[in-house]
Image (tube, rainbow, N blue to C red; front, side, top):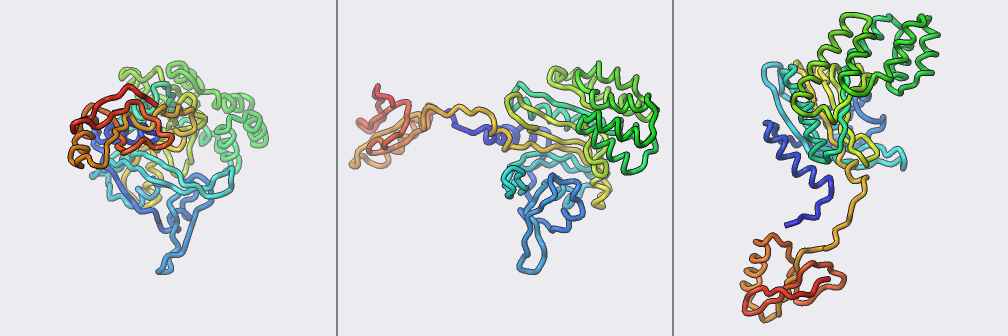
Length: 372
């Protein structure tokens, strides 16, 4: 049977099977969360507006703007007891275009507890497999955010200049970097290195080689060595064709650490997957454990070109009112067993698009040549 599934519906079905093969268990949380969780962690969530309401007991609750934060808040994972979870949830965020709240569908997974290099590599591999499940023409960008962070920390900048340069690196704004570096009194060589960070992206081997030549300290070299280890593993597993590095990718430094990544599908306008390591977020929420995971933005999958189905149903089965009901049900089952979707009617509804027409004769479905 050919199901007329939308891209997000097909992805959800296939990805559930993928995640469960790796031992991830479906996790369900409520639509509401204490507003204080998001008020205290606004930098972790996308946007600064949260949809709130007062519960019957007087508590201020929020419609979830983020799933990972709720998972972290409720997990019982520790460094000696890991949890592997996946979810299919809706979040509620401001639509920047309409200035109204929008319900957004997400799917993702979280590895919580004892996080080592195998855990991180597994999640990166699953991110690649997720994108490939959606479409084989995908791109997964990977970064080690400590590389840029360790560079900026070595310069001993004031907090405001530090954050200004960091934001300009994220935006690949070379002019902004140059101006901030000048105000901070940095020399031309250091400024040149900072201006090269936004362009540290591309094929894995070449980008790693260039990043090593730009490293100013041992910490930066160690970051690149760790990133190279993952790249070598991914290459040996056959993923290098769809991967590239982007060392200007630095998520919020108060919550994320280490490896971060984003995924894209050709023909879709925005990022469809994002994730990384968030040990800092776990610590901020009082959890003695690490965390790594990603989210898939299912709504983004609907923004590509969708080809409408030519037919509403594979087959229409016509029967008369005096036909025994059991005969009609059995006739439906015969067609369904052949892999057809069936619409059973006494007459053909107006505008119904069907591929094959069957009529009941002697208690059996008989095909007629007419199509619609």
